[in-house]
Image 1 (cartoon, rainbow, N blue to C red):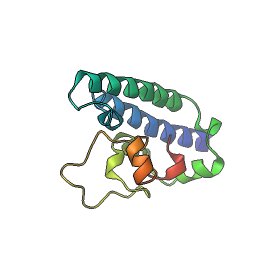
Image 2: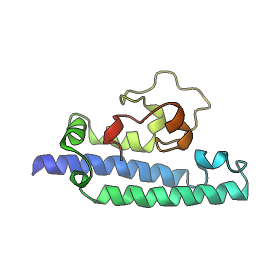
Image 3: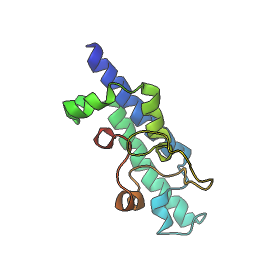
Length: 135
């Protein structure tokens, strides 16, 4: 039971971090940049649509047991990592590389709105920290 609760709590921390990041940047999303000029009403509306869908998704996945949609191997990856780190992987994913290590030299203009589900990032650079355990 302890292992189940540990995996559930860490998975919830990741997804709550993603949801809070989506709320923080609700007004702007990188995927809307290619469809409308940043700061325009159209960009705001597109961003709100994308963010609202993802926040609802993140809250749903925070609530349900991760065992319903992750393999034992994926869940085993979560065990050695603190819940606070999983929260940060969700809330500020732009700070970490694919292995979950802090990026050493972040540029001053890093796009803090980014999350691993952004289309531009998925196509150009790859996945998120700890790959398949993200969601």
